[in-house]
Image 1 (cartoon, rainbow, N blue to C red):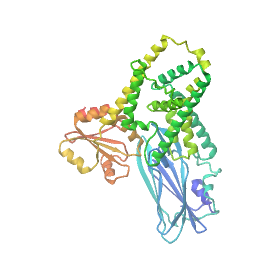
Image 2 (cartoon, one colour):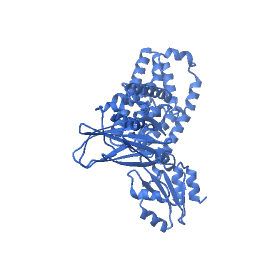
Image 3 (spheres, rainbow, N blue to C red):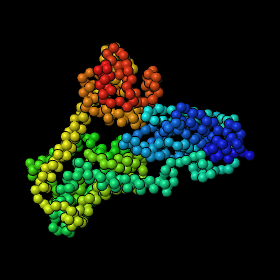
Image 4 (cartoon, helix red, strand yellow):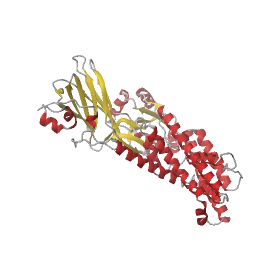
Length: 513
């Protein structure tokens, strides 16, 4: 009895028990195994590759998310035509604040080919394996009638490949069917809502929220309080929806950004620093300004917009996971925007409740008195701290080392011949550990100061495009993965630094310790 083609694809046991030997070919690297099967029916070739991450490694899926290189199937078709191809879905994860889509369990790729000659095609599967370090890998399979092609007993639909329930060997991640995906979506909405509520209690937001709530409680006209509550909530939701739209538009054009992307602009950072300084001076009664916008047309609505801008330097618990999920892949609007609106609803909730039910708070809060003036002055401290932090961010953005030179072997050799100290940063845009190190170490003011003090030349070896020159350089240091940091002193002695370095590691290296 000949083996059904789908059984060849999904279960090696069925292949060996019921079909001819050699109906599937399995190859593997130290980090991933790939098994390819092919069958012929009605003049078409059905090809399936099963990818299996090994020993705790994970690989970016065909839709990797915020960063990463996609797993790809590249064909040398010769006289054949590619009719269709499909991938199984990956798993959404949040790692170091980045939204990723990965394969941590076996994944499937299926293609249908139309023969148009005698020369058989070849298939190359390539992927990026990560487990702390990231390694690009690939395997090539040449289709031959002797090895692969066996008649198929039935003509399966493409959907049947991914919906069989009688083959327990393959487990799909959450999101493979609508029920699981919607369940995960509702959990994300709850996380976003909780993150929005907690955002109110961040140091840069809570003082302003508290004083606004006190002013609402003091309002004698309840109808006015309720109207302001609704206007404020509308302003908050509008600003979050606009933020979601801008993020979506920028990401569709290749920008790798997330919540707080405004802080990448030094002009915005400077404006926010001035705003928080003004707020601190108001809390200290140094200046008198009516910042509530209460008496302007739609003043409460404008206050809601301003409140979101004030919250932009902050990130609350649960918030990063929810926003990261929303930005992981190009999701439809009915998945994407509700996450940001849920975040806005949670953020608007405390002030909204204060406006709708002021009598409850009147019973809880003490009567207005000197304590309010003392508390107001104490609230100036987090305002000043936020202002100082924004100034530091602005300084770091302008003082962080921008002298990274593109890696060229001849340039490095010339620098070493000249007696220069050299640091080589082997990195890539798909390497999440590399990006984390960029933010935590290389963008810091302390690292910039060390580079200037020790007069170190910086070279960045960007391996995003799999440069053969960089591959050879990695091999020369006995490595095949990144990140890798190599430091040469003035005597041409080199040392390899940790893959997760601290600024202290570079300080010791530069000092010769």
